[in-house]
Length: 147
Ligand SMILES: [Fe+2]
Ligand SMILES: [Fe+2]
Image (cartoon, rainbow, N blue to C red; front, side, top):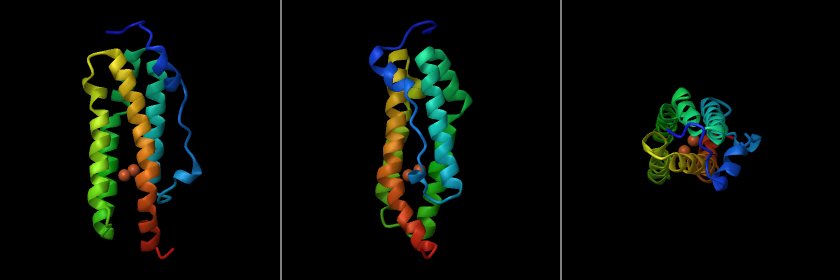
């Protein structure tokens, strides 16, 4: 499947441009940051592989266990929501469901172009989630720590 086949030019550009980790993405200086870094790194790696060859990209998604990392990360974050009585917990969990939904084609897409497109979308969705929702949660973490 897709061996030697080039991905469509419109995804290729995005695939070839890694999303950098920024200091401003820091949430807890701890486990959540490590998980966010790992996830972005894994997505960046899978994107670069996909730009070369989609079947290698699929292999990278499996090797990094992106779906498993994501499940663990969301579980860790949601565990903290419960501990902190976080008021936006329901909405934030829904956003996690949305990312899970964005990631579904990474394991189910029969077509390489759909896979490549989904990978770019999932990576963007994750980083957008971090900025829009996880950084909002950070204020509650800081409050817990008396900062
Ligand atoms: Fe997160
Ligand atoms: Fe989150």
